[in-house]
Amino acid sequence: MKIIAYAVRPDELSSFEKYSKKLGHDVTLVKESFAPENAHLAEGYDAVSILGNCRATSEALEILSKLNINYLATRSAGVNNIDMEAARRFNIRVSNVPAYSPNAVAEFAVASTLCIARNLHQAIRRVDVQNFGLAGLIGFELRNKTIGFIGTGRIGLTAIKAFSGFGAKMIGYDLYPNEEAKKYIEYRTLDELFAEADIISMHCPLTSENLHLINAENISKMKDGVVIVNTARGALMDAAAVIEGLKSGKIGGLATDVYENEVGIFHSDHTNSILKDDILARLLQFPNVLVTPHFGFYTDEAVSNMVEYSLQNLKDFEVNNQCKNEIK
Image 1: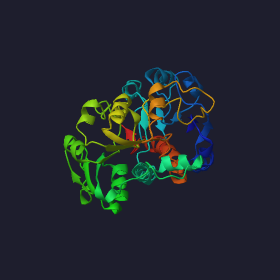
Image 2 (image 1 turned 60 degrees about the vertical axis):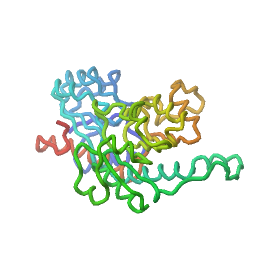
Image 3 (image 1 turned 120 degrees about the horizontal axis):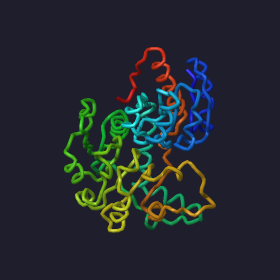
């Protein structure tokens, strides 16, 4: 299969070389993110490979359709950046990589939680300017807290297992309860989880139904001083409402590896630029907020898997005309 891969990072190059050769694909690598403006570059190809920061809009997919491209493989788990209705309309079959390495994100969720619990990010910043004082750095132990998990699928379950060694009480919410997760957590309604959890860890996909799940109304249902950890999708949170919660003290800490409007900001160096996103700039000013650049997935194992599995998806389409990871 002849494939054009967009948004290819340097760390993916060796994996593309290895697995395209193994699977017999002819792959052209492009570093720019896929968007309507450059969708025409796919002319002459059989399939397109993209990442989560690409804009697979209706306009872009229509261009692919006119180029007779029938396959779109994202190298990420989330497909919220793909207009799935348009994909169906243009008969473009879409696949994702739902389980590239759940350990990567799960372990990162633990690390982020501990950073907030022990004020580690603040301590590092202080030491950088030779401030070795303790004032304001007192933290808390997880064993005395209730951790609530929103989403208990592959990544959520792995996170639950990773947190289980701390001795905390663990509860969860999911539209589709996981029998394996029941060995570690007690399921609650969403409102019950908001009311009981000291720490809320997000592990659900973004859908039209849960857009801004963390909003002013739901924040008001939470415990005073609640800690929110989001390693899932930025649009699960209404960032403006979160800021108000931080200002009032209702939210005692936030660790977020994602941001609703991160495309064009995250994964780029803006050291000598003015950050024009006022909400993100405000979040960065809080001492009890940890913002990281959507790299919870970023391990050697995960990057290799994301490339391998996405190319395997296209091989399955080519050989079998079906793929277990196809998004219906």
